[in-house]
Every structure is written in C-alpha cells, then in structure tokens.
Image (cartoon, rainbow, N blue to C red; front, side, top):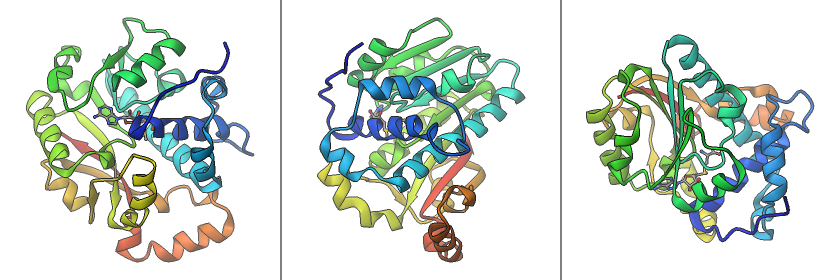
Length: 267
Ligand SMILES: C[S@@+](CC[C@H](N)C(=O)[O-])C[C@H]1O[C@@H](n2cnc3c(N)ncnc32)[C@H](O)[C@@H]1O
C-alpha cells in the first residue's frame, strides 16, 4: 500500500503522534512491547513537518509508556473477568487489540468518523473487533455496547478527556454512570502544570481544555477512584538519567506529581 494522505486536523491529527511513539518503541533497546502493526501503519501515515518538529525523545517515551501502562491495566481486567469487553474511547489508531486483546469477547474502537474511516482502510472489522464511528458526546453509542453485566466492561479513555471541556466530561461521566454502573473506566488526566503547554497545542488546533488539581477533581465528577498512578513516577528506568533525576526531584511536590495522572475508576 502507498502512503495515505489524510486531511486530519485538530485533535484527530494528534493520534498520528501516539501511533508513531508506539511504532518507534520497537527500535529502542529493551522495548516495552512489540507493535509491528503500528510500524506498518506509521509508514503509511508519516507525520507532517509541523508535527515532526514537535516530536522528540520525550514525546516517544511519554506516550509509549502511557500505552504500555494502559496495556497492563487492560490485561489485568481481561484476566480477572470471565466475559471481558473492552471499549476504547477516542481510540485513534490504537493497536492494543492486536497486542493483547485476542482473547477478549468484544473489543470496540470508538472515534470520530474521519479516524474510523482511516482505521477501516487499515484494519479489519469483525464481530469480535468492532469500530464505532461517532463522537463520544453523541450518547447513542452507548446503545451499541454488548449487553453484558457492566462489571465486565473496561472503558479506556487514553489521551481523550483533556481535549474535552470540563462540562462535557461531567455529562459523559453522568451518562456512562447511569448506563453502565459498576463498569471500570481508566482515564488519564492532566494537572495544571500542562496549562503551560496550552499555547503550543492551540497552535496545532488541539487545545487542552480539562485540567485537574489532583484525583479529588476526578472523584468530584462522580467517578469512584480505585487507583491513581502518578505518571512521572512510573517506569523511571525509561527516562535518560537527567530526566529521571529531574522527575524524582520534582514529583516530591504535588503540583508536579499531579502533572499527569492515570486513574482507574469505577462508574
Ligand atoms: C491523542 S489521540 C489518542 C488516540 C489513542 N487513544 C492513543 O492513545 O493512541 C486523541 C483521540 O481522541 C479522538 N477524539 C477527540 N474528540 C473526540 C470525540 N468527541 N469523540 C470521539 N473521539 C474523539 C481523536 O479523534 C483522537 O483519535
């Protein structure tokens, strides 16, 4: 297949970054995971100049590590539930299903139509692995979730909620809570530190919109917080020594410790 020219703009375009971080992971010494499909897709969807200028080693480490951490949470959910269902919200071109999801009963990838159309050119939809083409804010998608006890369902919102407005997150959580009480939802959220990066993301057409002070802001949304991981304290060995030492020092202070959280919640 030859390279695909996309017309992606705004937040959908950002998923090309995360695709590249997973593709590049394999070339690192001691990679966290193998992702041959990400390598294949990334060759077809190279970054444009503007995005390439923003891509660096820290981007690669950050988002591949985030993907790996979500893999760990997802694998645990799959192992602990007899009929697991995984729903990725704002899935982008996630290749997690192909990495770890083969034994799951249903795996759904939800994203905006322009992204799902792209996935349809690259990936194969099956009854087990379905693609939902909609905004997460159009709540009809909830009718397409398989009719199983909610405890079996894991919702993954990786790199999504920071692009929504706070009141949209509140509405989404309320709807999901009323439809799937007891389901697990893993989200990653940005602390106020990332407001410093808002200008760059606004220039890219993908402004960050929702920031939290700490996990209490997540609980205030009506989500039961089961576990919080402080991203910059995870996998210190992944970072070059100067960065590792910097994170170690800075994350003693709540403002930096809460800069990026991965929160496992129950609806
Ligand atoms: C940073 S990317 C993350 C993609 C993927 N989760 C990953 O980690 O590789 C953000 C994704 O959220 C999707 N997105 C943004 N707003 C959305 C919405 N309202 N409904 C569904 N998806 C949305 C974008 O299209 C994009 O694919």
